[in-house]
Length: 635
Image (cartoon, rainbow, N blue to C red; front, side, top):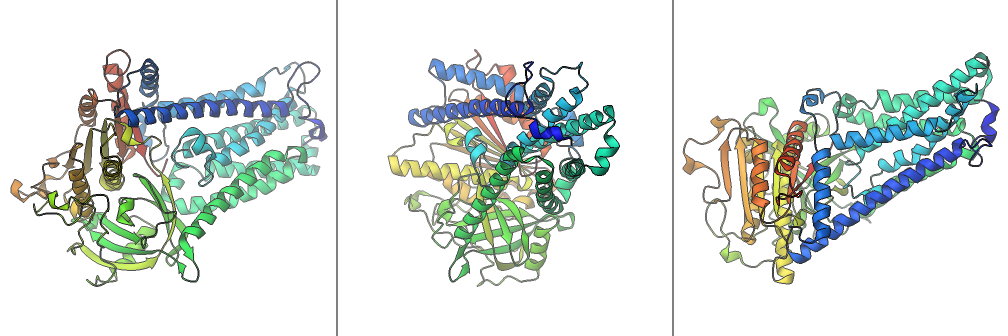
């Protein structure tokens, strides 16, 4: 790098009115600040709408302002929910975004390009150097944004935007990092071109330490953003990706500090401060929540192995329960959230995200985990070697009853027709499909996630899941019913506009439901539904393999409960969404929660967009709009 670095970026404009590179970097943050401010305004509008619906008990817009806002959001959803289905065949290699996310990324890249060439004098031979300086300033100016988008426990952007967690912002983290790489490529290219113009390239490469450090910094950035962050590596070897990411980020920051002049270090120090604050806050909460003196680790995970009817094809699950010992302290969660679990005795440096299927009133965390490669396979292997003892903790637990409801005599067991012992109790009878169990220490990090909008504010909730994705939807819907039960207990009536809950669950075989450990969760959901009879709760389980269903309908599980239905074959996603829309038209907005494969989530969002457009939802027809929340870990 030339010595002109020492006087570049000072002040705002040159004598000819051309903005200086440092000023361009500051203007970048003016634009980003305005964008975040507008996003926060939209979030505030959503929160005011939530308060209005809860207080009025209606999810239907009545005032002119609420009708106008609903119309604008409907138009926005129709436009942004669409994801081209033909691109999904390449989803194993590339994660194609929805149209809305893709447009945001495109506008961001165009903004950066606009900053590059704003008021440049192209007739000057030094134009290459001017663009190089601009690109360098824009590159380092983006570092704080990239680090903010990766924060797990520093909720600055999640608070401003209303995003549920860093996972929801992960796409924008990657796009911002690629924008940073794009500006660094332009900086590298134009600086080399300038050296060629003035015949200094060989000299700079051999003698200038700033140029040498710049090449090293660019190489580290290319490895971080382009090579090691492609989807197959993130998806199939995440442990390698994460360890590589941490190591090379540290190396990149050190090398960037040596390459960038001292007067531009402010952006680097801001980024380092954000990372340190996020990591420090995360580990401080982990220590406070998981350790006590002199006992050490507070929580023990009781893991039981569950074998489905097709073990050879990988149909194996783990049921993990973590008692909170009557004192959850900071361990409070909302329906639909997840936590990261770390098992120090088996995998001390790896934490995995699992959806919480239990509610706070259970006084324990419960997870149903599908066994795959890595940590879950190790846990399954070790748990299978430990046979279950009926007296051991490897078996499931009786959950403490809720103090909210005492109408036990009026409740009926969903399968046998006998009075239920407790509306929140999970059956603890042994299952012949449990093959082993262990009790090991566990470290809990979280909770995280959840929908940015509470589903209590919608008139109808449609929860769709495929396979083990039901851990999210079952936990979400049961949590909604328990929250409404608490509202009734506190206020004496249900003031929520929620009218109907529809659960659609797609499985390959009946064993995926009962032999994988979900029966107790269905029991709890059905009993919670009986607590709130004013809310229509319907559960439809679609079984692809009809051979796994009993020949006689009288032998179907839950035959005494009319709220649950077993159907053969895969459903039409478009028809499910349309039925839910028609159900909610007379009562208010529809909320859709979906957890499953990328194909399923794309079908749901595309169906919602097309149906809202065809029905002219909230744009003159009187029909209601719908909100879609997609739960996923890898994006």
